Image (cartoon, rainbow, N blue to C red; front, side, top):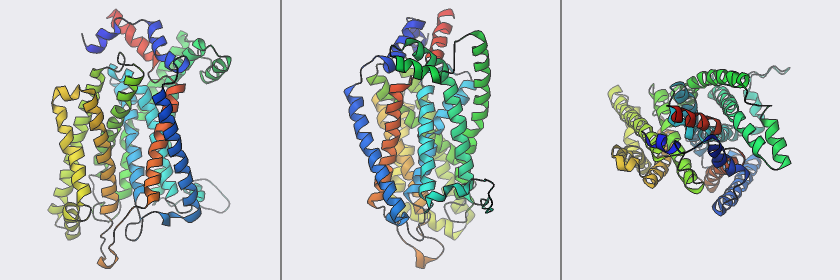
Length: 446
């Protein structure tokens, strides 16, 4: 009997509902949650202040220049959209594959997807220079005949991100409807009963509701599954269609998708480990769940490492002097420390996951997940910045030096993510009550 099976043997429907729903309805707010909420709220205020200043002054407050016309904004965009991939993978693909271990982590992973993808969508808009005209990118009919430029990567991003957000939101909301009904029935406050009742859409849990729920849930899972591949492939084409050395590579779509899952599962561990500790959810998010997530992390890490190797191999094999010069500059140039830090964080450190005690050490996994997040962000910065700072014209070579506004917007976006996640924990069950009940029933009747 597995670890999760043995733990679930002692649980019943009522105890599962009590344990998870009470976090939202009855459990007092932990002081650590309150401190984190205040800190992240301050970070969000700094982010919006920086955005207002950006709208007033323009993108010149950033460190971008010529030839580095893209900087932290596009690197942050790629990083955040990658983090959102693990939620769709866990929810959709593992559901279709009937993997039971997804039950304990799919709900907050889906919320993570929504928050990360929403934040990612901000950065291309901020980078436009005139962000109040962002709607020009949308193909809407109008008397001025302002049709989008379909050869522009910005239009592709609008379609990719909006599709990803809409499908992910529908998938998440459909899965949370039965739990909202549980909260409605258990709430003691009239205001909460009305609020949860409205969002529960009249759910009563009869056979007809469950039959339609299962059908719709599987259909949305099938629709969301291709998005795991398509969305970050489209993002990678923003780079691959250019002739810039370091961008022009056919390996980018699978390379970016693997990197997205790599950073996404690292974020799942970053969120799951403190959450299970402070909310005492060790019976639901067990060490076995974390170990399985670590195995996926290790597999994605090897695909990313293969991408690093092939990127270098193809540059030298092609004989293109510009590609070779770019790789040499990546190794030994001014941005060389960033590249070797990327290899350390994304290739060397994850190899400890071959060791089973490391995969089952909670705080080892937490520390590793933070290093992976650092490595994946630096990788995005390396790809965006280092590939551009020495172009085909030596007279225009230059360096990208981030300003304080680059750092404030990066830190503010991280604060916004955790602000939304902390708010989510107080209003919606972080673990699916209905799916956990079903798992308990299956384990008891097996």
